[in-house]
Structure formats: C-alpha cells, structure tokens
Image (cartoon, rainbow, N blue to C red):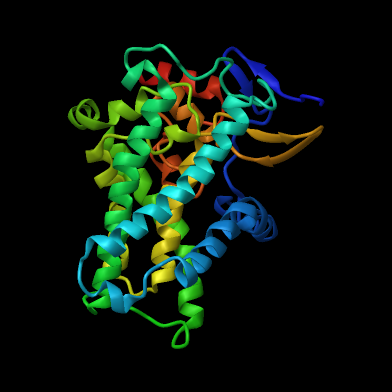
Length: 320
C-alpha cells in the first residue's frame, strides 16, 4: 500500500487541505458545482442515506395507523431499528479502523489511538464512554424526536404532502434536508460553544480530541436535545415521513463517518472512499474554528472557516 499522506505534527493532513466547495465559488462555476454535488455530496453517502430512508420507511417503520397513540411498543421498535443501524455504521467503522486496525495509521488524523485508561471518560475507557452516550442518550432522544414527529403525522397535526401530489416539490425537499441539517448544526453548535452551555453540556463531547466513529454522538443529553431539534423544521414545512427519516439518518448516522478519525478507507492495497471529515477534525483539535460542515456557506461569512492546521493556528493567534 502506498501512503501518499502528508504527515503533520499529530498525524495525517490532506496535502490540499480543505477547499471551499465550488457551489459557493464566485464567480460561479456551474459545471464544477454540478460535479461536486453529484460526486462529493450525493455520491456515495448522500445516495446511501436517501436509499436507506426509503427502505426503512417501507419495511422497518410501523404504519401511521398504529402510531395514532403514543405507545411504548412501536416507539421501542423505532429505537431498536435506529440502534441497530448506528451499531452497523459506527460499530463497523470502529471495528475495522480502531479494533482490527486494518490500515494501521495510514490516513489517520491523529498519530495515537483511542484512550483506554483516562479518568475523564466513563470506566476510564473512551470507546465504552462513547458507546454509552451514543446509545443510551443519543439514540433514545433521536428516536423520541422521530416518534413524536410520526405521531404528529398520524394525527394530522403537522402538514404532510404525498409523493403522488407533489413529486418535484418533495424531491427538492430531499436535497434541502441536507442543507437545512448542516445550517441548523452550525447555529446550534456555535450556541453550544457559549461558555455556560459549553461547561454544562458540550464539554463532554470535546473530551474526544482524538476521535473515533462512536465519538460522533457521544454528547450530554442536553446537547442531544438541542442537536436533534432539527426535526422541528418538518413540523412547519410540508414534507413526507421519508424525508423525516432521511433527516434523522443524516443527524444520527453521518457523525460516525465525520468522526471516524481517518481521511480515507484502505481496502487491500487500494485507497477507497473518503470516510472522515478533516474539516471537522480541525474543530476537535482547535475548538474555535469550523463549527459547521462543508455545505454551510455561513462558516466563511463569520470568519470561522479554516482549511489546514496552519490556518487554524494563524486564525487563533490573530484572535488573541
């Protein structure tokens, strides 16, 4: 295997850093923007979340008729389905990259492994701590928000549009779900860095400087309530249960990839798909930069965008 990585002081840094997506280029670059949307954005993971939402709604979600009343049975089924998917996503990546260490330190952002004897984590073990917060708090609050939204649909308390009535509108809402989720994440994330709220809740997540797939949802219950509040957009904007589930998966499953701790997945002697997000890795390392994701242009407007470790260090020096 040929490792073309550039070794920063603490591990791998992509040679080109993180560039601004061409969808926000000025002057506009329509062909580059279309190529980015169809590859970096929608393929492969965007398409995976969309397909998974369709299959989940069709085969692994109770019917709306059965959700007219809030009952533990069907709500528990939603939790079990979400927990299973989270274990497949986060657990699978964790097993391959951090337990089996199938590619060693190749493309790993930090040149060290997750903590196994650190008193700031439950049971002094980072992985066990992260799994606990992700499943017990994160998956529960995620599933509760989803169940309440489905209950509201079943009782016609919130607006719903059928695919047979407005397929073009709902197709636009599918794409809008990704942009809304990242914009909402930027806003609530900046709020979570407000000092009192940071000390009360967000500090728990930032104990993970060297991150792994289970770190993505390792949050304080209060932060989970704030983080998953993105569901509420569909309480006022007409949509469909498939789009609600898609939003849930983007909030609940995508953090496993963005926190994988690795830039790329290596299978055999071939470098495969990008599984990590260096943009967010810089946030965990430097705290006061990159609060959002690549789809949120507001990052650049507020001066919190950095593309490399050197840029982050320079930005923090200038602020001080």
